Image (cartoon, rainbow, N blue to C red; front, side):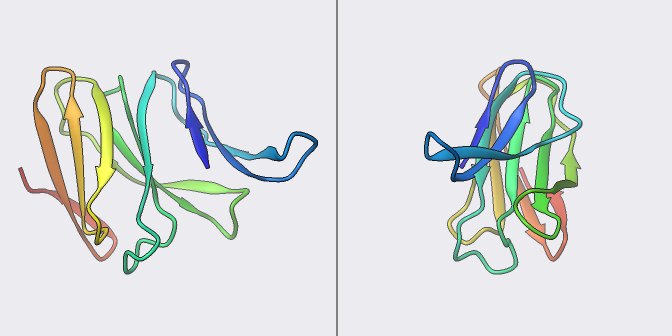
Length: 120
């Protein structure tokens, strides 16, 4: 489970702790409001637990675990947006990313191997 907030904090949670859940990682490097996040579909080939974040810094960030769920690293930053990102999502096969911007426009990115290219 992942949660995001208006101060740019993103936390990865796992079962455990007194209340049933505990923070296992806080993502580093985000400073603006994070409005959307989405894990890649579990069945997506090659996506292995990738996480998207998008927010008011006008960028989509792709995160991947680094040796386990307690350490994550930034895998890619998709910056070609002109307005804050309000939501992000993966396609069911994990090969495309879509986002909605504050001006009502949408963008689609295509994943090939370990890189991303803007499609629309």
